[in-house]
Length: 195
Image 1 (cartoon, helix red, strand yellow):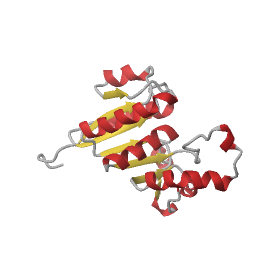
Image 2 (cartoon, helix red, strand yellow; image 1 turned 120 degrees about the horizontal axis):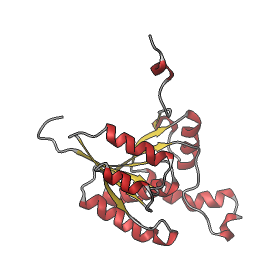
Image 3 (spheres, one colour; image 1 turned 30 degrees about the horizontal axis):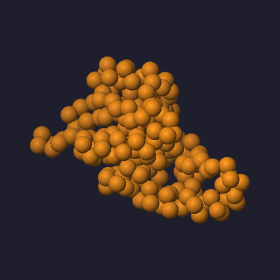
Image 4 (tube, helix red, strand yellow; image 1 turned 120 degrees about the vertical axis):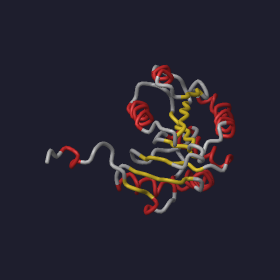
C-alpha cells in the first residue's frame, strides 16, 4: 500500500452481537486483517454479549437498533448516516436476510458497493403478511421483483460456499450464476498435509 493512500474503510454488518458462528468468525477475521490498509467498523441491528469483546479488541462498533421489526426504519436511517459520516468504501454482509437486505438498500442510497458471502440456500428477504402468504408464487415474485432488482444492482463481490448455494441465490435474486465466486468455508484439505 502506498503511504499516501487512505485506508479502505469496511463496514461489517451483523444481525446482532450474539454468540454465533458468523459473529465469532468476523471477530477473528478482523484481527487477522488488522493493518494500516484497513479500517473496520462493525454494526449490528441488535446488541449481545460479543459487543464488549469486539470493543475490547479495539474494534469500533455501532448498535443500530434493538433488533425488533418496528426499529428497522430508524436502524436503516442510522446505517445510511453511519456510511456517509464514516465515508465507508465497502459494506460486507453475511448471509442473514436482515443485514443483507439493509446493506443492499443502503448501497442504493449511498452509492457504495456491497460484498456478500452467501453461506446457505436462499431464504426470503421479506416475510409476507398472512393474506399474501397464501398467494401463488408468481404473485409473490411479482411483488418482490422491484426490491430484488434494485437492491441487487449495487452488489459488488458475490461469494457462495458451494455451487448449490450460488444457484439458489442466482434464481432468487435474478443474478447470473457466473457472478458468484465459490469460496468454501474452512481450510482446504491440503493445508493439513505434513509433507
